[in-house]
Length: 461
Image 1 (cartoon, rainbow, N blue to C red):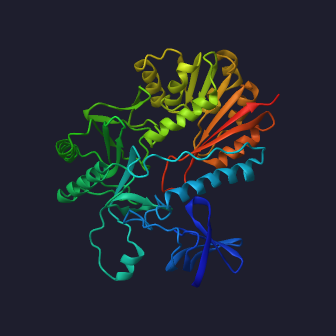
Image 2 (cartoon, one colour):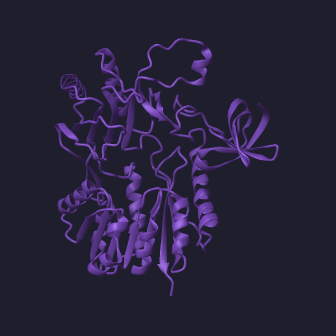
Image 3 (cartoon, rainbow, N blue to C red):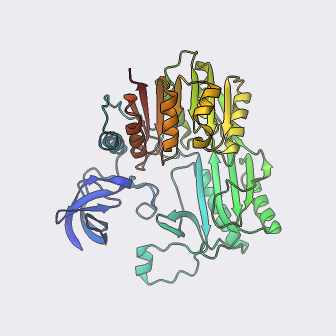
């Protein structure tokens, strides 16, 4: 153990950084200015990983985390940092990625747009049930016996079969806590089996809760085995206890992974979807739909996208990775036509319904893998876009997609990303034909290190 180590900075993945004997050490849950005793957990040639064994002197910038699970749950690694400091760090993260990875000429980066709500901002949460609750280091050291290992909570980072039992989470409305705890308590009182992640067996498997800005609520209970009577009894109990649930659905998932993308989702009570609202537009969100998890910030983000697109009403716009068509429909009133492309077929169905529901007649949507759908032939058939809006997953764009964009040669590209590093990599690939002229970070995820960033690229002359 190393004593009296000063934490000097923050690093990737929300970790903090110190130097011990001229070697970089990454430490979770630290703050610049902390003086700590550090225990090294893993040592590599160029760096080490450790954890705080004892706080000698806390940094002056530290604040008291609101959540009792902070330091064990990996979800909110920055609860101990004031929100203004979090925003500064995210701004720097965007700047560093663009300068270090893209290595292109940059304009002045606009100040990050902070979140109006820093608590209860998430419209979607997913929980896992497990019969092998994660025991903390303090619990293990206590020598106590813990015969009750049933849990409902979050996976421990890096351990697929370990679940931390959660008593509270401040990222969603308190309804989420009440619903999760009710189902857990009901399961224990009625002898329902909690899922065994190694044996791949058990009834109670996962729970997804969506709470829309409209007040509509969706709960999707996933069961690991088909047991009609206890399933019906549980869902009846949930419906009776929580009349505010407008969409109660369930899935029987007996396969080895938790994803429900390829599973039948059955409506038990209410509607098969809920609706989000943005600038008077209504967006249908189903159990498999992607929708930005911070509803209020999503509207701010899409306003940035529309502003960067600089539409006059005459443009053909391609919206790549369109999801349920939120961006496509949001900008449609300012464009001649919008073409949306998305991998998930159910999301495209919702995108079409969203256009129809809102009386939008100038959108067209296509489902399929982006690199397979967006080809030079597709562009030749449907028209060369004036503007391309791209909002890819964290991994960024496939090289084939980058090539088609370059061949299509739109006037402007608006690149929305939840991963500034892969965004920077893609910008470097586009740099020969496009220059960056605007950058706007947006914070969608307070208390985490994640940040959304919007970049506008204009075609070089």
